Length: 174
Image (cartoon, rainbow, N blue to C red):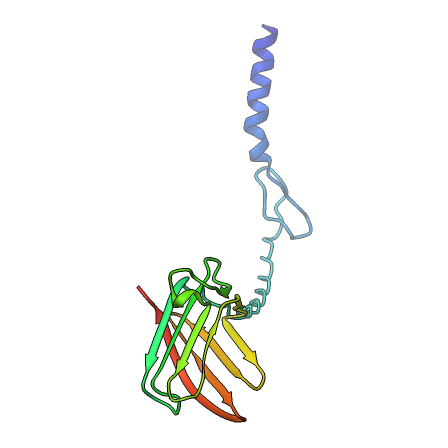
């Protein structure tokens, strides 16, 4: 019996609590059931929207991966024409390197037939930020830049103080 009475007291409390509502005599709240009637409250003012963020800046362009293996080119243009070029890019893509089966085992081989000299160079030639350079003052200057599946540059040979220059272009050999 004691639990029966306690049960009904709890049920009545739960039913009466929402009906009591909240009331205020200063006009901020609405009228609650069973409470004193107050004036209807005014809604608040909407907040200001936030400002949009600034867009980020694009990163600096990187160097595309340079295809490894044999690269060759030939042409008939320029004062050094006809010309041929042959070089091999190492597996890491960071140097021209001698290959025992390609370019007569040289890292680079450039022949400008219209010039008195050609160059065959065996030691590795570093590729830095997509470009390479091989220079021996008073003898030769070979510059090259990789751009996707094309490499291009200029070769200059000096003989008796006279420069002979030719533009070159090469692509990966399949």
